[in-house]
Length: 444
Ligand SMILES: Nc1nc2c(ncn2[C@@H]2O[C@H](COP(=O)(O)OP(=O)(O)OP(=O)(O)O)[C@@H](O)[C@H]2O)c(=O)[nH]1
Ligand SMILES: [Mg+2]
Image 1 (cartoon, helix red, strand yellow):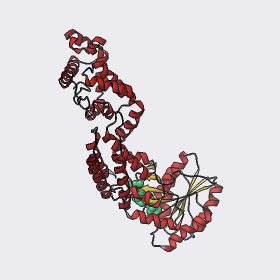
Image 2 (cartoon, rainbow, N blue to C red):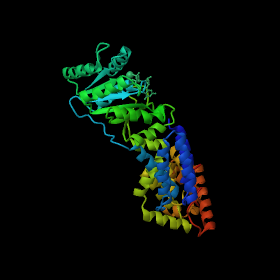
Image 3 (cartoon, rainbow, N blue to C red):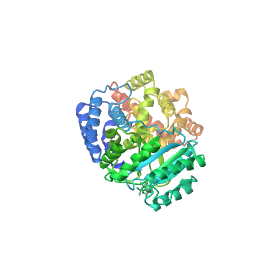
Image 4 (cartoon, protein in one colour):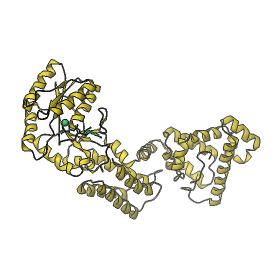
């Protein structure tokens, strides 16, 4: 559902990721785009203002760290802000009490009944014995719906005759839980509009009578801006302990999800990602932010590169690039570093001087070519790696056989590498960064 937002942010940030230096005008332009993207996604305007302000401030103050490009760091800053935006409130799901009572409240059609069944499955996985309760005495069809879902997931459902006052239904459910030795009660309450004072009073009465350990407000993510008002109204009636955002799989613009927690201070605990009872995800701000930015790889890399890339080695490499002494041996070392960090081609862009080839590298990884390139280089002698010019016809055949590749692949790698060497010599003395844009990451 965050597709549009994702696309826009990705485009904006893609312009920056390849760059080693970013000036204030670049940051301003990016901030403008990010602001538009968030507003278009229907994020609350105050939230947008704050977030963009912080992103700008951090980005302008960013120092360029060792081997990371400034652009990538901006991606990281934007991501960190999104994570913060989504991290508001207490997000731990509590199950204290015997039975632990979980009450689901929300507008009509927001997804309470579906979520009740999903949560039942979830707590079973946590080793609990749930009882689903149809706490909607007004519509027998609502209880039928829950009964059907309960049957499908093999969880008992408690229902009372139509017209039983809600408080009596809840009390009856407590007795039933004791009888069936159920340790978790999930109340599926009737959908209500925020304007319906009687029904709003009813959930307040349930809250007083049974003190649910969790009162989860179920919010349809498609609601948009209005979701904030809804959350505030429910929050005024009962102590809402968390949010469940449903229909995340839909095509909403996602703004509600991004603003509701910030504005209300209530944490998001779960996300509904489909109609089936297994389509419930524990809410992880970092994962959602990553999904929105679609740059999970870059972020992981920024973090992993900070840990893994040996600063001294990086320095040595840059020196070699500058002096045009980069050999196939160094290239092999890089390939190994790449694989140590994980199978993500993006990280090639972290290696000083190799910026810009990330996409090629990813494609090469996908095709398994990094491994083939590595095999070819490994089949060479030390001497051959340092001076590919000595690799004559018979040596090439030997290397092809030894690496399980073809003569054509070996030829191509050597040819490309020598071309680059020649180029580096021509440019000799110039800064290495970015010069190797065409380094063969795999035989093509
Ligand atoms: N795609 C998708 N559909 C969902 C999700 N959650 C619920 N739905 C659908 O939304 C509709 C309403 O869901 P219900 O669970 O009946 O909503 P409710 O809040 O119990 O509705 P009332 O009891 O009438 O207030 C159903 O068609 C569900 O299948 C979700 O996460 N994704
Ligand atoms: Mg319902």
